[in-house]
Image 1 (tube, rainbow, N blue to C red):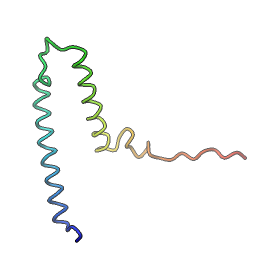
Image 2 (image 1 turned 90 degrees about the vertical axis):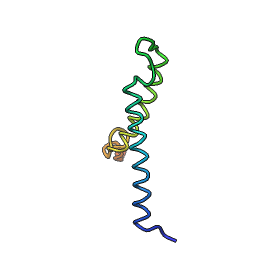
Image 3 (image 1 turned 30 degrees about the vertical axis):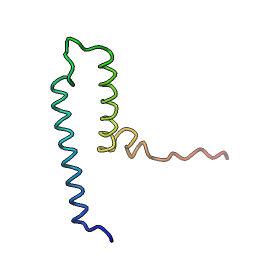
Image 4 (image 1 turned 45 degrees about the vertical axis):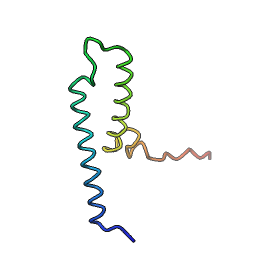
Length: 83
């Protein structure tokens, strides 16, 4: 049985609602320095934030078709054919 547009819209809104909640929770966690005391930050915390940043950048690139997900990056460049 094919899903209707109403079902797709419902699934879309449910996914968007969850994304909005995840973003709000992450923004609040960021405002609290990700639970780290600024006086106690060490290189382990930097590595953790770099990991978070890389994943968020990948999502951002996908959403805005930038980086490896840009149309320019996806163009196929033909190889030179010897004459």
